[in-house]
Image (cartoon, rainbow, N blue to C red; front, side):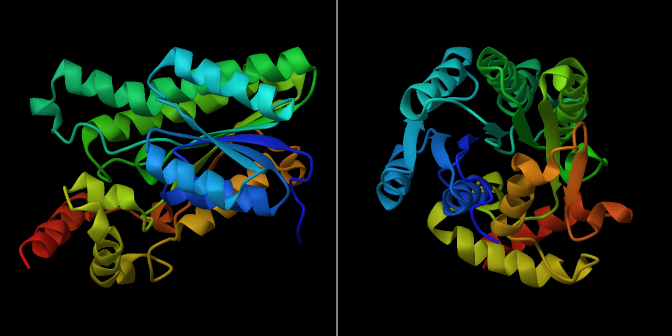
Length: 278
């Protein structure tokens, strides 16, 4: 299949690397015009050059309401409308356990992971309604939004909250033809894993391969996931192929959340420590 997004205009946040980059590139390949939003300007500019005419990069801090409003306006001014909003940007956030978590650390994590989704949903929905057209809002949740013990408390809580945003938006905007869904990735080989443990970004791929050897066999499907596999799920949820799908959180996790998560949170810390000590 090809051309699954012909004539569509999409915004992808966190588009400079990982899941966001894979999705932005797949959307372009499937016929969409894309606004790639991120704060990594060098990578974003390179992405724009690689897809000149079909993708524009916009520096966007998703914790800023004015930045999110501006990127929606840019999509409309650049390409005439908006059809898909992929709220994907994120990072690990405050790693502290609950007993040591500060209010400031918690608030910053929620601003990045949850408030950004609320604001992206808000401004995308306003634009869809103003256009009088259907639209698709896709969000990156997490296996940590479905079960405990996958990550640090602030990340887990923030990702659980995205499920509430998805369901509330599906209820409020369904009558306008606006769909609201999320993807819950499992363990994906992206740079966020390296950043979470202070691994230099130029070692991100090496670290991902190391995690594959340590943790891949423990997944039901026998390996870790790839950004391109999450991008395919985002493509389906963004396209008209999922036109009767709203209010869902789709696990794309190799079956991980179908079983008890077990000791992943401690296993990945141990693996990162082993890698750093080499």
